[in-house]
Picture 1 (cartoon, rainbow, N blue to C red):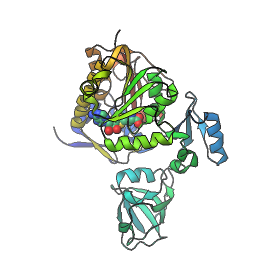
Picture 2: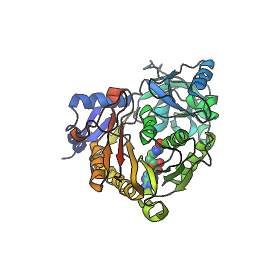
Picture 3: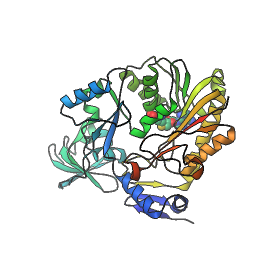
Picture 4: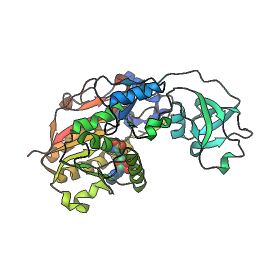
Length: 396
Ligand code: SAH
């Protein structure tokens, strides 16, 4: 059977994936889930760099700047800023088309930077009022052009449109001086639980198999005070370079060992690690169906299947690296059980045992077997991105 289903405006999935998801969600739940994915959560979370500042001190510094900031009810280092909206966006006569990624940031209040521009309508002058439009035609903001149509092709960076009113609004987090000073890292609440579920300890040997851009890695470093042997692997040289820069800003240079590696072959390429690791984190590439806000997307069953097979390869290698008694944490930012619970079942076939974990304000597994042992966040239920976390142990 071919064809696609549009669940909500802009979000299409192929018929096979639709049928697959209907085994787990009602039609109404699917609609509510994708509606939520179109919007940001109501809270924008950042993680305090506790190597440099206490959560209390950072909150008061940010409040002195006039920002509205709150502490999470459960995670001490998690603080958040409210995301306001939807706002009514005024119409302008002229339009600027942004690429998808840039449009999703502008939708939340960021300025549009030159690399994110797809097209400036002809005849725009510096200072003109414009609408910023996503590639699917959706208006994401009203702003002022900082460049003219004839200039935009000649520069490679800088602000192209200064955003005045966006659909959702949030202070420009990366422009806050404390961000530049490395006092916090922007990271969703579910992602901030992952390092806690791993529970890294000083003195341990820890492997992060999919480390870039370094969100969970830098959290592991914080939780161990940098006193563990932490290997950070990622296949992408560019992402590893950016990760090192970003962690440098957080004051973490020298507290971990980064290498560009295809982690599917670590047992071969890093034989010294086989059987000698206390903890492994797998945070693999996935079909990304929990990421929000997403204005439009197309997902297919083929993508989900191939991701699931790809992810299993990391699990096989983690089994080889871990010592008896060692711990594996597996997390994704996607929804289908094939990439989540089914891979946990696969890990159990290799010999891993699931260790039951639970955290406040989250759900358990989507399949009966893991109802009380793994963690799920749903966009339409928990006001967070969609997320999955499981903890496993290699029996001793
Ligand atoms: N853990 C990161 C996010 C990881 S996203 C954080 O918390 O910030 C998934 C990462 O897996 C991407 O950076 C991607 O480059 C990497 N990746 C994909 N295939 C890989 C492979 N075969 N080996 C190692 N890393 C891989």
